Every structure is written in structure tokens, then in C-alpha cells.
Image (cartoon, rainbow over all chains, first blue to last red; front, top):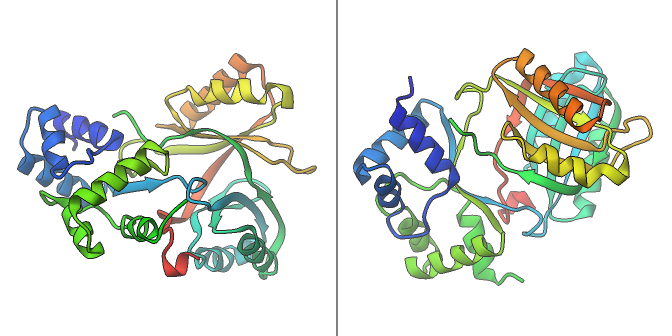
Length: 149
Length: 159
């Protein structure tokens, strides 16, 4: 179970780590705690699976990458194999099975349009793929993965 | 735009920050630069938006948001910005993007909606529909997560 301290720590750790030599000291200061306690608690929260990743998250567009959301209609008996083939692309960061006609949805980031088109052409040819829609973003109103606990 | 040190730093920063007293020091060492130079460059990326976040990302299911739906909306083009900005303001919406639509899939605005139950998800979507007057939407629940990872930029196999 999360303690109140854990919740406060998770809220703060999500919104930002300092770019200074001792970032956990700064977190500790805001929590009236100390560096070792913060480090130990973050390690526990990671081990328990509350934290997926601690680090830098880059803006793909700013780095010159292009992205798209892809919806695929796959024959149910082929779904697992198709999902695994799609997963093998390093630029696929999310791949979810969803309810509805389009039953597999993934995001794809590539350094250029040519590699995006090549990847999508390959997926279209996979056994069991009946339809594929590529929906690149035209505008991002919110990209925020912080949760207030 | 980037020099070779920038791409090396960005590639090196794909790893997790260690839970040690000086987590940046190890990364600077691996790049053969001083910690100060690394921190200065990172500050620059944060200022110009290359780094959109530096911190922890949670497993939302584990912290209690067990119902997560991709909600797709059909918005008249002239209202796209207004509605996009309105929906983005909701704290339980983590992502809100306008996207290209297709003749047989006319949805052009996508929001990730997080809740503690399906009923709560549905109530939120209904409330947003009432607020915006947009009645064409679909909630796409996920059955199974086949992959969820962070992108590895400028790494050999990321290209």
C-alpha cells in the first residue's frame, strides 16, 4: 500500500527532476525528508511496479521524428502473430488490442516518411490484416503523462 | 540543429536515471564529458522543448486507473481547436491529439481517458459530450497491452 509520503513523492517525481548534480536532494527538500530516504523509497516504488521509468522523455517532433497512430483490422485468429510482428519494430512504442472493428492499435515513430511507409506496407501484407488506417497527428493539444495521486 | 554530441547525449539519456546520489555523473562519464557540460546541454533541451519531461512515469493501472479508454471524437473542422483545448484541460485526459481522418473512419480528435472503472469512463465521456455538444464519439477500451515502451532515439536499431 502507498503511504501519504509515497503519494507526495510520486506526484513530485512525475512533475520533474532537477538538472543539478544531486536531484534527489532537491526532491527530499520539498518533502522535508533526506536524500537516502527518497532514493530508497523510489527504488521500492520501482521494484513494486508503481514506476515504469525514471528519466528523460523527448519530444519526437522536436528531434525530427515523425509519428502516426495506426488502426488495424485483423482476423482474430491471426491477432497474436500480427501483434508480435508489429512489436518487432523499434519505433512501435504502444500496441494495444481494442474492442471494435479495428482491433489492433499501435503508434509508430520513424526518423523519416520513407521508413514509415515501408513499415506500414509490410504490416499491410501480414497474414490476417484486412484493413489498415494511418492517422498522423495534425495538432497536439496535450501530451502529459502525469497523474495526480 | 544538433551536433554529434547532442545525438550522443540524447541516445545516452534513453537509459533510466540511476537511483544513486549523482545519477548524471555516470552518464557524463560514459560520454567523456563533464557533468557540468551534460547538465548545461540538458537544460538547453528542456528550454527549447526537446525534453518534454524529466522524471518518473507511472504504471497507471498499478496506481489505480484501471479503466483506460482511447476516446475518438468527430469534430467539425471549424470547432477542432476550441474543443481540443477544452478537452485537454480535463485532468483525467492525458493525451489529446487532432489526427487525420478517413472516409470510413471520420474520427479526427483522440483523447486518452483514465478512470477507476468503465462506468466512470463512460460518465466522463458523456459529461464531455454534454459540455461540448459533440455527440459523435466512440470509447475504445483496450483488451490487452501487447507493447508499451519508451522510444529509443538515435540508437542504431531505432533508425
